[in-house]
Image 1 (cartoon, rainbow, N blue to C red):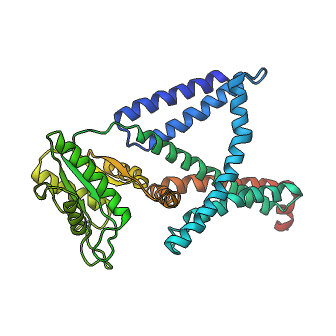
Image 2 (image 1 turned 90 degrees about the vertical axis):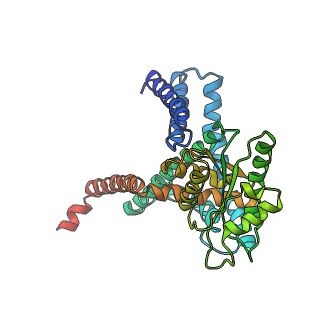
Image 3 (image 1 turned 90 degrees about the horizontal axis):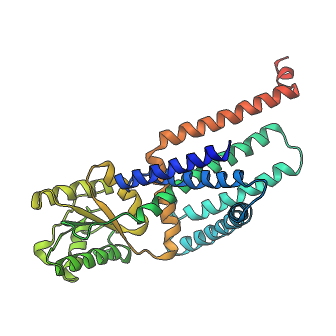
Length: 349
């Protein structure tokens, strides 16, 4: 593939990213375009300067051969350490194990690769390891696209004037707002006070129903917290039935449209939850953008990984097809290899 082809493809992806992002920064495909533009651009530079590498080609080679492998190692160790912190502070659950399991899987893949290449191994074992590596590479690719989408969405323009601030609920403890949820409300109150000072007071819509282990609906507890922070009761609209993020958005939108028809919503949640909420808001056609509130640093890696898993699960059919194609290719390669060794003929006899 000539550098002109890859370079042209990189430019096309960059243009597609700009056009798509301007149309709607909440599209997940923005991350795909960003990763493709970077990857194809790097390949174009390397192929164009393969005979006489310039500074840019040398930098790309150093990053690819040195920084990325070292970063992979550091990241796997960090995720394992973070997973142990999560277990100690948050307790044992599948969600809290996410960073630990990811770190262990990342550490295991290079070990398997070394084991395969050290000496001759059975064909089935080599095929198994190859399938794991290819599937791991695909997951890494998808995560890179997700991360790029998260990065590009951070630069999305947010309206300074919203007609309603919808605050997504989360579990309340003994009727009180815990720190994670308080951060969301504090961010919403800060935006409310700023706009109120500018002469345009938005509605504040705390949204959340009552779970089986909660003494009051989340929306009610959140409303009491917001009142204590100075929100005018006339600007407070409680949504107390939602059980999911989708219901948060739909039920809150209905309340907003009753009071301010055609009003623009700005959704407030924690940083890690912004991107999936934005995707959902777009899919539901709410027109809302999303802003985030700070989250405890130790909680962030597992939280982002959970969000990534949730996004993958929403498109599971596509990923299942890709995984099936990868496994089929590996299986076909193993079959050809067995035929070359004569093992298939021997078994047939």
